[in-house]
Amino acid sequence: EADIYQTPRYLVIGTGKKITLECSQTMGHDKMYWYQQDPGMELHLIHYSYGVNSTEKGDLSSESTVSRIRTEHFPLTLESARPSHTSQYLCASSGQLGTYGYTFGSGTRLTVV
Amino acid sequence: QKEVEQNSGPLSVPEGAIASLNCTYSDRGSQSFFWYRQYSGKSPELIMSIYSNGDKEDGRFTAQLNKASQYVSLLIRDSQPSDSATYLCAAPSGAGSYQLTFGKGTKLSVIP
View (cartoon, rainbow over the protein chains, first blue to last red):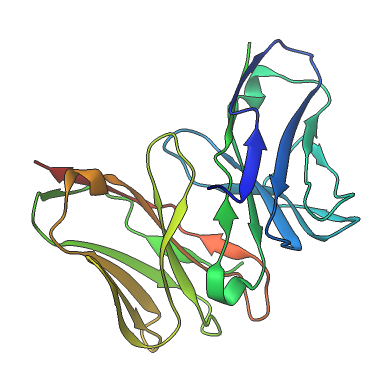
């Protein structure tokens, strides 16, 4: 049973639309991450949070924004979707990193047409 | 920027053989290392973690760590077609860091 949930699993949306990708975890982890990954390519960190009201941009520049109002919830928002945003978005969380690493959600595959 | 390097492959092995996946890291202060498996179109899942020099075995999987050489490997014995996936090596991004640095992954194909 998954402890970190992402919705929707697949999303096809038109250019210019505002979208929010949801990520929730039930493990009480204080650290959460968003990665972007194109097919067959490496993971790119786009946002992370070490706790409520704490968010930072990652290594890859992204036009998306995130919020962390509750520990368990870390949504990612695109104000105006473009075809270049087409990708897979993976959410992850961690507690004690050194022991357990990250737990990943099942991902959202976004297609902007 | 701390680095984690993997051979990109693809690595092809026949069914029943041993698959050997290799990873080097740049930060001598790294204490723990992780191997993730990612099937095509799916998210990464943790299969092994290792903290101490030497070998750690879990079923058909063995992780090997050599901190002096800054080298981590994953051996898969009796490889099965279901092992065909991309394997990601990861290490903390620095001493005390909360983040993992991932390698680019090695794609493994097990040929029946």
